[in-house]
Length: 365
Ligand SMILES: [Zn+2]
Ligand SMILES: [Zn+2]
Image 1 (cartoon, rainbow, N blue to C red):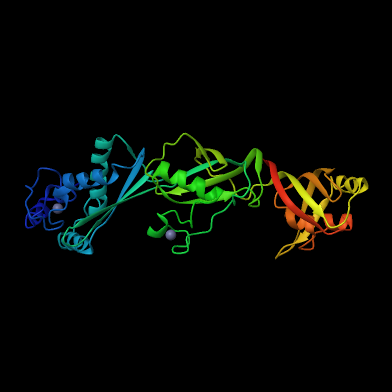
Image 2 (cartoon, protein in one colour):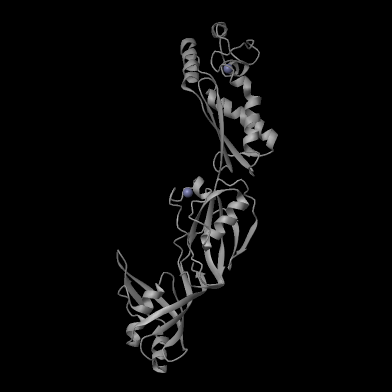
């Protein structure tokens, strides 16, 4: 950078550290001095700042990082005032200079890469006007996708949120954001939090089932993001606890929660009146038909692709259907929510769903 002789003379009026000189003139033109007029020793403290950062990141697994900093306005004001008075521009801002120097040292020490777009961890420095320093580290959420199975009845799919933090994570819920670990969601969340040392896992489910339902076959797809994980190199994850099992793997892109899917469901139903073989034939003829119902905004339709009814005794039967995801099984059996057609109506007898089990969930392209 061309700084003329006059500016050099003027710069000499200021005490500046090596780094703050470098931003305004070529190295070696002026001897560094302290305390630095601009940074008051901050830039001479890089090694101890790096030590603080190294201590803060030591528990985190990461391949890439970014360093950000918030500096007190007084530092910018002093640098701006000096530049204005000497009519010089400087090579870069002190903030860029600081974070760049820290980045260079961290690359050397950690053997990890700097990445501004999608870093695994974000290191944030906050410097106050006395040059007191705080270091905070936050990691990018780790995303997993997989399937779960439920081989015993009674476990709900979802967990209520922690009433104290509404799911954000707090001391009352050990940062899970959940009311407990008594559901498929809770069981998977607890294990993932232990594995990742992260917090407040957020799930997306492909469909839902009842507490009393089994989930069999190839299981139900779901995805989950765990926030602020310390461990992120998880590979394939397997969880097995309390009749729930799940397999999942780390994803770059999360499963689209609006994905279209079909579900094969085995319904166990009970009728108020006796049923006949003819009734079972009527149910089988539902294959290929569409069920319509009103939800809050519009009339929705769900297609039934296959149907197979089997009588169990005088008033009970099983009915195995493959249908579009989102068909509400209990209402389809009982005839609530203006479902048309529905099983109670077809059989001319009030029917009720005893249980329904998920035999398969297939994602559609
Ligand atoms: Zn300085
Ligand atoms: Zn909480």
